[in-house]
Image (cartoon, rainbow, N blue to C red):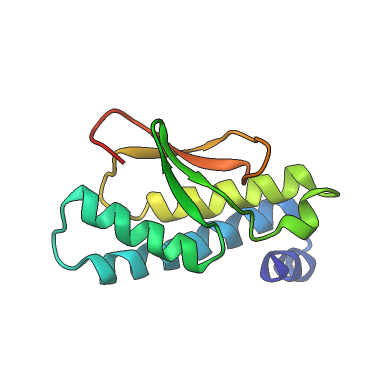
Length: 130
């Protein structure tokens, strides 16, 4: 988050726009780590498990649900009360950046705020079990 804000200040660009780019870059790095862990040409279940492991290490605390994968925690929880749109948009951009740099998985990142969890979750897309 700080990288995005600092980048906006240096470039004289809107914070939300620059933050989105920094978040997607973070997601790309997370995708690279998930791919490294999953090995060469992994089945979707193995790749999703590796992606969940990376997300867990980033503080999202993933948990499987019938409709996909929920995030039991927001790593930016302390900021979300005052900056909900900014933080939720950043979380979505991180996860979209990660998923967009992985082979297709049976899930999609969606905004779905709810009590006791992050505003983003992985919704089952119908391709296979999450």
